[in-house]
Length: 58
Image 1 (tube, rainbow, N blue to C red):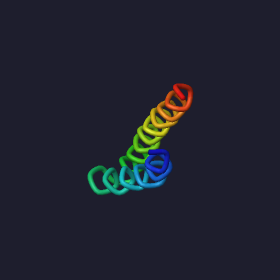
Image 2: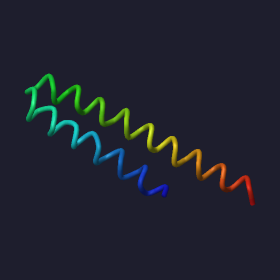
Image 3: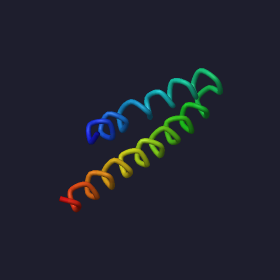
């Protein structure tokens, strides 16, 4: 579960960069990468929170 958050930090910005560049050009690539990074940070935060919450229950 923690690995998903780490991989998302690499994969989602690259996917946003490619998709944004394909659809809207250089400006879209920039915003796509930013959106992918923000989404990846959110996923990483949620997985970290779940990991900490699970560790506290033990």
